[in-house]
Image (cartoon, helix red, strand yellow):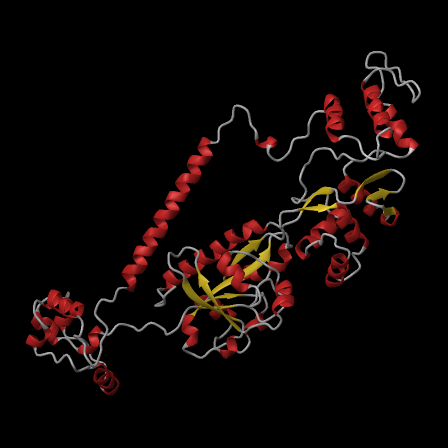
Length: 475
């Protein structure tokens, strides 16, 4: 009998109090008993199997707060059920779910035999003649498999410690009558099947992804290269590269054209532009650029000024609330490493919630890119709004109160809106959001290995949004 299934059966029937620890054994009423330190089939998310005594102590103290439970378990030197395993384990033991990924199929449990006469009667029924159907009682066990089993039981009763049957002998007896249970590894064995097609598809996908990332990197490097050296009023031609630039594009040095390298006309040009009314450009300046000294000299100094990039890093806004899937408590682990941790768990660890956090975007970037995550939009200045690229929405219009926009429609046309939800939640929760211009990203409640896929989807949408609107920002 599997001790985990037996514990679940007792928990569902509210008979946990009949489970008692006697010495180094845990007795389930008068039917079964197991060693205290016996490992069960339930595996922790940290990788280890929970022992039977740890699960029994946990199920008897579910009414305690987790911190108080940890203190008592630690004082008894018991294995502690982690906070992340607490709810799924309790749901399984109480019968709310029939199974869970944390359970591993193991060999039949050994070290426990029935102690009641009813169970011994049931085992005796194994001794039934296959041909005649004649049944032999306890006193006449015959010569079939049941006789071999009861012979082993007699050996067990006559054992020195009088407790446990040799595991290898018992497993051999069981395998004579039963077909071995398939586990996660053997079920993947498919005769006459080949996975070469799947491997080829995955390899091709990886190659396409690498080509796309390489192309994006080259485009980013190309867009980051200035078309002209940045002006420096003190000494614009101090570097050899700058002199070489003018020589390659003009055919001569700037000094020979009468350009004073120590002067800057940016401020004068800006003042002239404010004072003078706008005039149409001469026809000759609207022609394609000609690499001749005369044409370059005749152009206005202000024509070479490009639109300046906003100062600072891109900004992502998250809700300023605790009852949300994402806030400044857990945004760093989620957006940087693709690991989702509930905000209430992070709140117990970190304490006070920060208003601003800085993250390093590493997904899809050969060099990490800095981002800011904020939860108070009212603290932003007008120039800061130029750097806001995304906002995680709650689906409530009061989230956008006091924002410098007309309404939520205007906001979501200028800023990427993202709604984060659990994939098991009802669609009624996103009924309002589906009418907005937002991107819906779903998370799994229990499969944490899928978090990275959701984060990659978010960054892809951010990149597409910035490129579509041609925002002059490093992302």
